[in-house]
Length: 378
Image 1: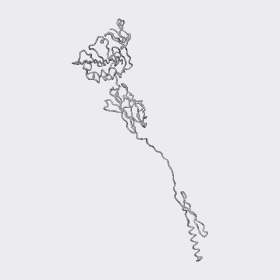
Image 2: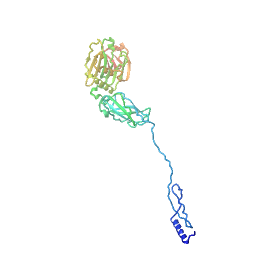
Image 3: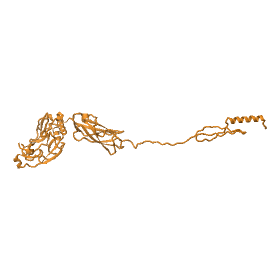
């Protein structure tokens, strides 16, 4: 069928209109982030049109991260606590060892008691020591030390029954460790119960076993179990030794003598009778005698047969004022020999107090004077 010229003109105009308006065929594929449109196709020599379009794309990526983990559950730290040695004054040194399976830093708390552990209070840290926080540890233990400022917590006082305890902790709390009991002597001889004369030759404490049915040689050669003087000198018979063959001498510190006097007071010595008789006991037994001399008081108490008649505490005093409990330092011993006839004739011989010879007359005494140290007749 042949079209008329008017029909052809209409068709051409429609195609031209379509080309002008961007009639196109879009691509079915896209790049990673955009699509490019293809030119539209015109007919009958009409110029192609252009256009733009948008599309979407997908991609992949990788990342890294860090984290922490644990090798297992935490175990509480443990602590080994040492004890002060002897009476303490002011700054008290307390050694301890900290152990922890994970080697974690550990804190410790330190407390003190002066009433046999009935009550506890935090201990004030002194000027030295390793502190109480973030202390190093190891599975096999690390040694540390704490210094307690006892003056800050106890002031100017004497305390016989002091105890320290320490508790370790990291994320978990360990078992509390206790020290042995010890004495703190911050008041010293200013204590009315321990105001002894601190002078050479001034007898402070004497413990002796005397009398009884014994040979005369025993009476002549017997020596006291212990004699403690104000300058700290101690003349005594060592545990296991025989005073007939050996005498020893040593020294005590002021703090040690104060502790002995406080313990004597604690046992009720000043209320003891002058003498205790054991009724229905064998006859001719020796007496056990204790003598104590303070600046403000003096007393001698005896007990027939020792424990046969002694009140509570009497034999305890005998125990801690004699070796081995008596903490004597710088001990020297003398093996006794018999006095020479020439020495008897001249009325003296040279020697220290503990160097008393056998068969020295009972009325001879020891002196440290212008002639030197010697045993001399009256």
